[in-house]
Length: 187
Ligand code: SF4
Ligand code: SF4
Image (cartoon, rainbow, N blue to C red):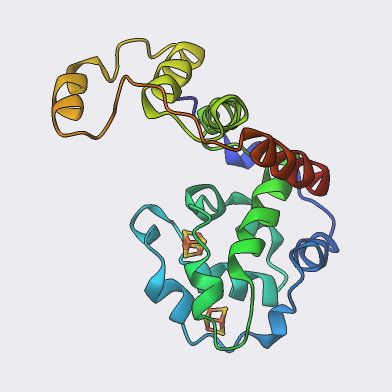
């Protein structure tokens, strides 16, 4: 995996924190740091700052801390944090916007994550759902890790974790329409 030298990231302008909050549709001042978002987050183990801390950084306008944290990149977009917040702070949306801002600033701690996203979306476009075996094959091909999952395939097949049978959703057109709509909204 490529290691990014975070010291080379340019410092962004001071309005960028407000920009992230605005795009995420949150007022970070609503947060009173109860920590409920972090307590419910399933991904904290790999994060260098828990979700409530990212909100705290934003309250203090600590842009670099937000952009250089791996937290938005580790976030699985499960929305648990947003659902648990007693103040209706959409923490998950903050993570999405922080990830975009971080990438725009040249920080990409997990360069392969874009390739995973592309392979995942291509799968959903094609089958209306994600097909794990094809997704893994596409991802491994595009990242050059050709055989990384091969030793696990027999066990995964026998436990029903993956299947070689391709199943498509019945109403693929509706899925494509939803994807078009969301892609348009993300522009
Ligand atoms: S749950 Fe809401 S109020 Fe509590 S720390 Fe998280 S964002 Fe702040
Ligand atoms: S959306 Fe991200 S930050 Fe929020 S609980 Fe899920 S993984 Fe954690």
